[in-house]
Length: 538
DNA sequence: CCCCACCTAC
Image 1 (cartoon, rainbow, N blue to C red):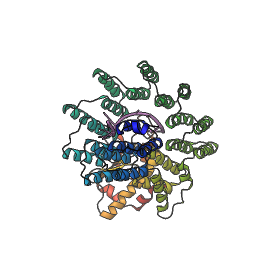
Image 2 (image 1 turned 90 degrees about the vertical axis):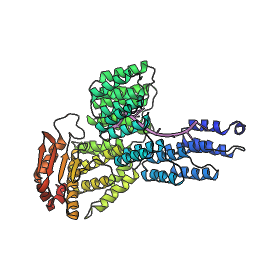
Image 3 (image 1 turned 60 degrees about the horizontal axis):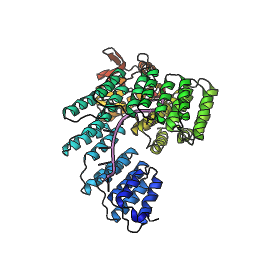
Image 4 (image 1 turned 180 degrees about the vertical axis):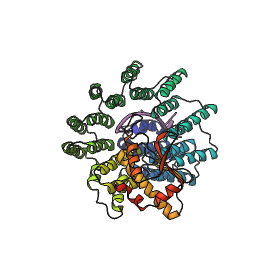
């Protein structure tokens, strides 16, 4: 082949960019390197770093960086930004910050992309305070936010539950003359949807179209989800048809969304129908879609169908995910009969997920529970590249399982280890000086009770150490993790029973019955009781 | 020529 002579480094980079598989890309990269007369430049090295980063091949990246310097190419701002992004996406925040510091030591000034990436990865990992700090550092460095940066921060604030702040920034963005684009609108619509303000979401969808934006695949997905969650399943299907009419080719995730929506609406047959429609379209299912259908089967206790589906997944070469395992564990916890429970156990084993080994090897708690916490920490370290929501889901299911199985000490220790690993960054926060919020609203019943008990014990210990107690604690229960209906809440009820049993001096305010408030002297006197340390055992 | 944002699994 004469390819080596005819391919210059510019063209080589164009080809390299197209290669998805990092092994193929790396093979091509090193093949090029061996061609006489060919020399990689900063662009090809940077592209290669990005491809390896997407696949989390950090060992190979470091080797490549050494060669890059050896080849006389210094990493530039784009290389560093890609590195930060790669580490951040894999949840290696310390390493991402290491690159951030290193680039500055090398005299490379962070730009808007650098800060934008750092803001995003920290917010997504649950460190919103660091993200906001980065935003301020960016502005101090003389970099004003552009549409891209605004969109990132609006999304981060909204996802962290600060919807008002997100909206404020949207208006600030417009006032600054930054024009929202399609992605900005998609973010705004999705935030409304997440806050369950479906009317507002659909209004924004119309606003977006009046502003001259044509919906894209992401917009359609969000709108379909909004319609589905509002109970308008037929309208969601109509959007699917419109999307096809606009020449978008439905992909696996879109079918998956319809499977999920029908499944959540408890119409298993429809969910299954869309799953089959996807197969008929020649698409291979992905794990989340299988999870959706699996969840639908499990909810109505169709365990045989669940078994067949799980088997099918393995047949497709799909690896059951943390969510798959979480679904099965929750089903096991809720099982009414022992035969259903052991069948769930069979399915859990079948997944082959490391979480199963983790559960099976859970030690009997020693005197201080340190062995259980270590066991959990080690597992969470292993799962560390999983996103926080998935980890939270699993930990929630594990705690609920232990709690309902009467293994309260285990449940408490799992909670403590998970809290330490930042799996629940919003659960216990200091609203203002000595005024604390305990937020239980996305937890299962067992987790809420465990989390509350251990958090109150933590307040007690802090008070005994420092001599200063909290002035006020708000215990927010919301409506429970699985509830879509406002009003009745199992979590609220369980929490109230626990508080009453231990005579916690609480009251409710402004008719908000989902929030229990304790404050002042009665609260501090209560925290001194030694039984606070053992509440979780009840 | 190379980098950053939105949707999808509870």
